[in-house]
Image 1 (cartoon, rainbow, N blue to C red):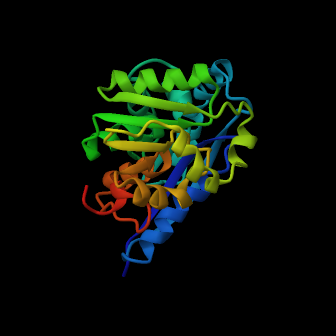
Image 2 (image 1 turned 90 degrees about the horizontal axis):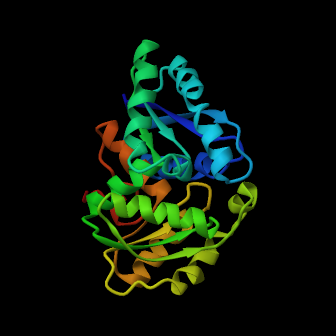
Image 3 (image 1 turned 30 degrees about the vertical axis):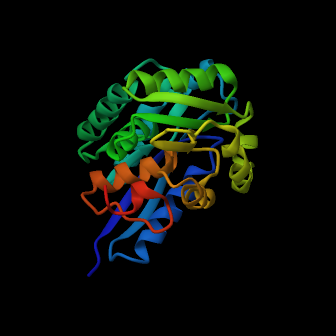
Amino acid sequence: MARSFRVGQIVPSSNVTMETEIPAMFRAREAVAEERFTFHSSRMRMKKVTKEELAAMDADSDRCALELSDAAVDVMGYACLVAIMSMGHGYHRVSQERLHGRTVENGHPAPVVTSAGALVEGLAALGAKRVSVVTPYMKPLTQLVVDYIEHEGVTVQDSLALEIPDNLEVAAQDPANLLEHYKRVDTSGIDALVLSACVQMPSLPAIQQVEDALGIPVTSAAVCTTYRMLKELELEAHVPGAGALLSGKY
């Protein structure tokens, strides 16, 4: 009988993409592997992607971890990259340890993956030392993301800020637009391209197409989160059509 796993997600209240792209990748994996997955979410209030709202939202993440722990999920993903990064360099380690602690205290220990930590860990798994990045954020938040990644030892050669302040508008972006957006970024000599450094901006349908065009690994915060979740579950990180990181080689 195939093993079944419960995947929990701590989600900003206005985020809708993480609950579509993460399950889509796990469903694609189900087509080539025997394990099965169910998905469970808890929400933190956030409408505008500002530093103030992000900080207030992050303070609500402990409640979400407890709620998901009540459901005895096997792994949790914190589905907001910039909320973690805006709290200071290396904060993904603090958040992951604290939220895991809440699950231990609640009697249902579960590993916690943050999309911020997953992104830098995914780039490390790829061996990427120099990258370029596409974000939907305003320029100051984009620079914050760049600084966070560089503090983790990865050089960001170039970044594109699409400057979309409203979180629902971010979710409404057509991922096909990324097939043109990426051409506005300097990709010469980089080891990998982060096609979406935001789990709210849809990118999954474009990942493999852009990777095939560039001939280098192309990834996203959502792809990296899926990779880390599979690793925490001690499963092969193989999802067809989701780029090099989920090819099963890493």
